[in-house]
Image (cartoon, rainbow, N blue to C red):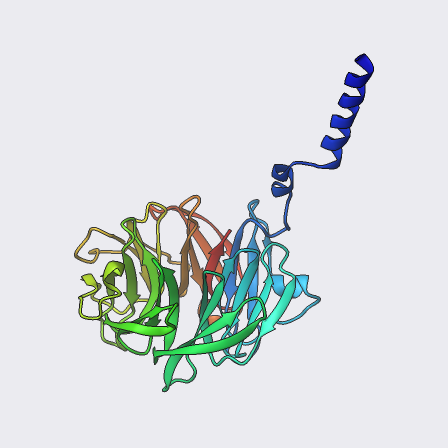
Length: 351
């Protein structure tokens, strides 16, 4: 009997050594860049010098991450945006008419999606990719539907002129048409625009608040001083006759078409020039003054808030005259530190 117990113990030990638990596998590091903050550096128009920078949790910075990992390979001309879905990062390169796809954890190049026209922003829904395209500066824009397994565009959905930001929310897709005053609502099943919502001039970034309402920031018409933050009710998106606009907050200035929301999803941060403003989602009027102004910045060109620690990131393009600068602040506007970036930093992706 003692021998049987001894052999059983040996067998259990062998099995436990030979087959580590799933939890151990899940906890193994996936790659050097599975944590941290990515900075999208647009680069100079027609110079093909756009890059991605990476700020690690210990605050060390890697410049030109794509080139560093991929033997000096260049991303291309006007790196517009980057988004992460699952194990992949999707880098949209506007003036090179392509999207580079890399492993999100190692940044090794996976494949290049071509045959798109002036692409802008990307998202996924139910395993399918959706990429906005300007197409041209005068024709209606569109959303390319992408088979992510076979790496091809299968079809497209026409929206309005200047198809810009895109977000998947409560089963539908929303596209801000930046050269107009409209937001297109797309049914991804029917693959068609089911509603067009009138908002302010030059709509851009989308944000979701704590009540799951959707906000879009509108930069305003050229020299119009008519920027707006517009709150939309997604529950009314399937009813073409229903008014989707819950609230419009006039900002009394032309602003950037980029914005960010805090971790609690009740405060929206936006900017004009080198000044940052904050609006509570319950407010009906714009703030009377800026939260802060960064005297060292030429003009902010991008904004983001780390959803883990509520640190505000601001990108200063330095007018594209050399490398830009990233400034970090707490949400009260107190400066933390700053970093050098590439040329024309315009946005952030947080891991």
